[in-house]
Length: 313
Image 1: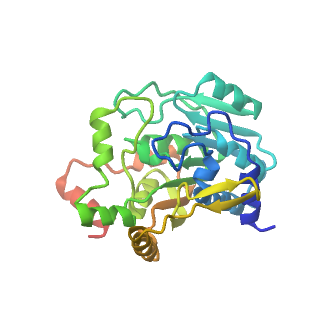
Image 2: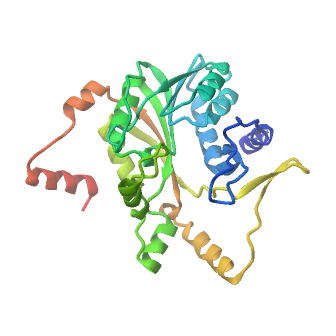
Image 3: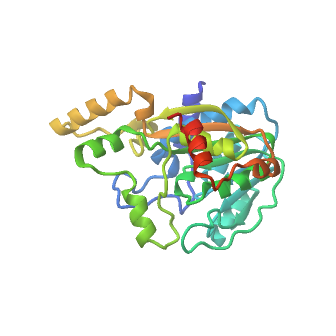
């Protein structure tokens, strides 16, 4: 059985947690589906990357940051037959979630991971060391201060430990098309949410380019081993229970949809126009060394030089 068939079988047979089925989302294509079918392609990419690093690890200690709804523990249990320690790091993890995670031998840490967020809650020490893998899946784009979270991750990983990130790509085709057609900025939603919203759900604050991700990861003591653009095709798929298979939704063949799909698919031939990143990095510097050598300056001349060297003007 190849990786894709193995993953597909896992998704078809997956039994979601009760809170994982989305009934309230305003997007009709997401209602009634669980995480692995909504994010079928994204989680397949994660599955592939974890399968590839598995050969270097035995009995890995895993941290899952921004872990709700908890589905990744089930995928990790499939990939790694023995996980001695699995930590779920998140904000406002309720008792029902924590009790269910205990059944799977998951240790939950209820903490703020972004203290710069307006109305932020209390951040506590994780007290985790020498972990093998940290998952940061579709989380970094929600953070006002990703450096704070990445520093915590660095401290919790062993030397050469892996960090796996998925996140939205700011240079994707649809954003560029909206800017060209409507003058619409991808920053409009983060700006609106920062002015208006103070609830528990954290909207996107900042989406990243490949170079930006590389820069902040290096600044936090990580080396990027592999980066890949992909089209996540969110909610394109559904489980057909009659045939027990995974199928794509059929797109209504209007002239507008046909032209749009043709242009979009042509755009996706250029990797940086795809809508998602997956990044595998490893820790190469300890947090104390990172903080000690992190460049901070009050000089505009020095800042301009750093900017020139970093952004390659």
